[in-house]
Image 1 (tube, helix red, strand yellow):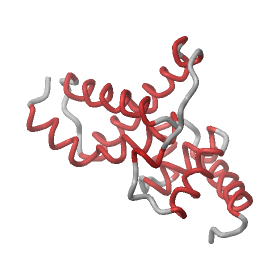
Image 2 (cartoon, rainbow, N blue to C red):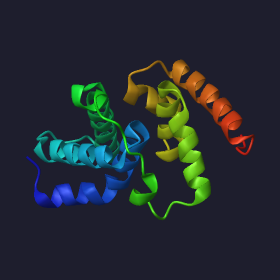
Image 3 (tube, rainbow, N blue to C red):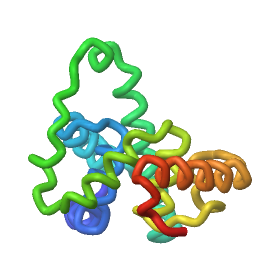
Image 4 (cartoon, one colour):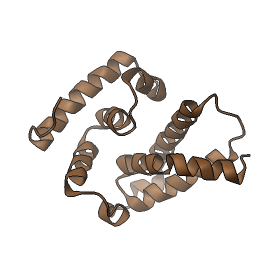
Length: 160
């Protein structure tokens, strides 16, 4: 079990990332907050040491993704209606940022995951392949197709 100081330090470093990832997956603030708490509870109870900060970050991403997937598969979630009110949870988001996030949320799951990890968290394709347990070439393909879809959704506003 980790000390309170270790957990607080991890919260300072990774809280925004975990909450954003939850929002990308769940598209619901209340569910995102629930998974956020679950992830950091698992972190507090996780007793093994991490090799470095990147290993710790990758572990948190993997636990977050798995917890989100578990919630989406759950009986309770499949029998409820989401009340998507992102602006209530992130009032500092500009209209443009919100439009881009909406576009990312609208992507098929395989593209949404790699786009988020690449552009929002700064991971390279080989790193994403390791995190998501996919072939690096598949990640490159999903990045390319995901960017193409985003360009179509956003009307050619994106560069690159």
